[in-house]
Image 1 (cartoon, rainbow, N blue to C red):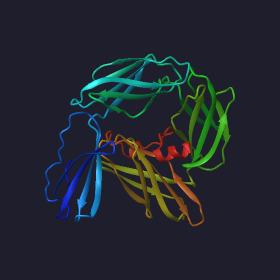
Image 2: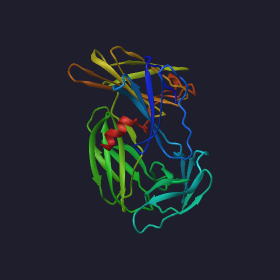
Image 3: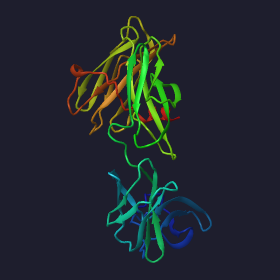
Length: 360
């Protein structure tokens, strides 16, 4: 650990174990040598830095936890009826015992464990069951460490846990496919209109579809479904969207020019429409969100290194509360897509903020 430079005074470095004193040393704050402590076992420590202002005055400056036996989870994979958990341990620590604590509903067989140097395999796993897994390492002489708790379940088939949207006779037709191997109790349908909560209702009927009457105005609808199965097993579907209505008078015409490290947005509104401001919202493929508020008809969005695509939409409101919205536009920097290949995606993965609206 490196000590940052502070005013010239003495400091005390105090090591604690389970809240009890273990070791202490003092040094000048101008001494920038790394802090070292020789340890003989993989127990956890806490290093506290205290500034010595006078023989009786002290100032606590901070602390840091030292966990030499920490279990780091690098990857969790499921395929077939198995789960593979890859982990890393400090080679300094002398292992006495290592295993996975697996919790699940009563009546479900506990999977067998196969342990190697850097991974643990659990099999067989049952369908439609959540397994809460925590790795535990016991070290010599008498210490242990636990990993974070991982919730593991076998994935749905590629054509399951899906939602499809279409417009029929001025109705939003919502169709879905749940897991065939699980006993579906109900489907909780969440609908956003123009990125705002609109409807939420439970579907318990026999057919995997439902209809919602639509107003005759240009809007973007997005739908997510929470499938609730027997035995407290549930999961969320993907979030998909569809655009309904004419763009001729109710929308902003959005285009963009694509550059290596940015996309330049340009939009126009209908007639004499004069909004108070324009708001640009979007999301990169890595989940980072885009939010900008401007007063003109242009905006530049940076393209982060390694981004596969960026999805944006522009909205505006005038002094009378009249709202305009553009269609979604998606830029693919690595493909070099520009205005000549613009399209509106009918199935979009929304940002984390929009997901929170669904799950509220």
